[in-house]
Length: 80
Image (cartoon, rainbow, N blue to C red; front, top):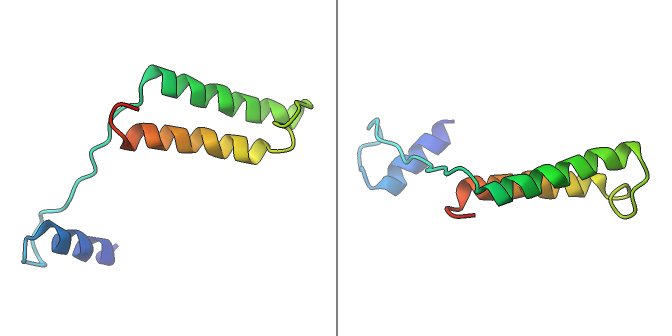
């Protein structure tokens, strides 16, 4: 935690390591299309563990990973 604080103070150019000023992440809500694609992928991955779905059942972990990664990208990238 302290390393992150020092790195953020150094990168913000404050100069004072005891300054309370920190860099803030600006998160934006994902678009509805991005959200629903991630939901569908997540549901497919979940159902793929219960029922045999070609490709999805064998790769349920990675399908769920892609769904979560898509949501994270939707938060970090404005307009996605």
